[in-house]
Image 1 (cartoon, rainbow, N blue to C red):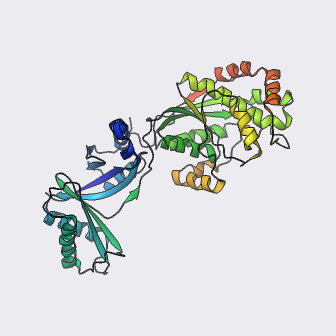
Image 2 (cartoon, rainbow, N blue to C red):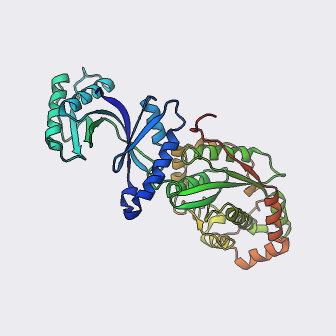
Image 3 (cartoon, one colour):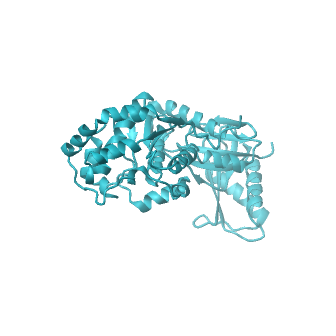
Length: 397
């Protein structure tokens, strides 16, 4: 058998799930199959107790990039698969090095071998030594086990051997869907898309709701929200975006004398609308991008008063993150370049000159009684739109 290109994917946190491990693994396997389903060539997946092997006629790089997006995987390795003999393994390693390096330039190298199949006739050290000698014979490179320039990983499996030069970090976390369903309040900024991603990474299946200031603002924030959900669909797929126009309701809060409490009153309105919507779609929690102290409406007092407006659990994945951390994560997951685009933000449309940092629950309740918030919740949801941003990785119809 000639060496065959493949991609190895490995779990991290899933291995700690004990008796529930099979259930988590099944979700991960389904997500992985979905991620590679859009490729031009079919992909064969094999489970090997903590490792999944992907093989296909599709380019290995395409397999690699799709697998790197799957939440729940800790490592993704492009590899060559060879027969389960020391000679075949050595030839696969020589081929792998020859394809990726200028072998005329001497490099210090090390072979790191491990056996998942202990019945293999050589120990890990013996196999590494045998392969290392073959590389020295082929290229004349020196072995350096302490500080090698190149590390080759060799894994003996149940019926073959895998050789790889690179290990790519996966998304980590728990497979999407294993922790339930949540509704993410999505603005056009950096914070809420990152919060949505972090919720997905803890196993939550997420849909999104975006509040627009229409008819007093244009559609630019909706375009951004759509683009953000489309980008996040690379990690999850099939997310729905609910667009709710709250311009008239916001103006009602302002004319009711919200004044410095306007921002907090608006946030309470968003949560109350989102909670009704969440219950309709059977979501069990709400997710926001709040970061403690980042703006005046996110002081501890204001966050507490905002949270009281909803009975569903309110999850804040970024509560202790600073702005630099959030922006860096946004760039890593691909939402940063979208979030920076200009738009008309409903939150700031009627912002007062000075936002109160210490509102009170009674103050906010009085404002809501003046405008009959319950009535406004029904009005804004009656005209809500539902969008289904496509998964960029989905197979074409």
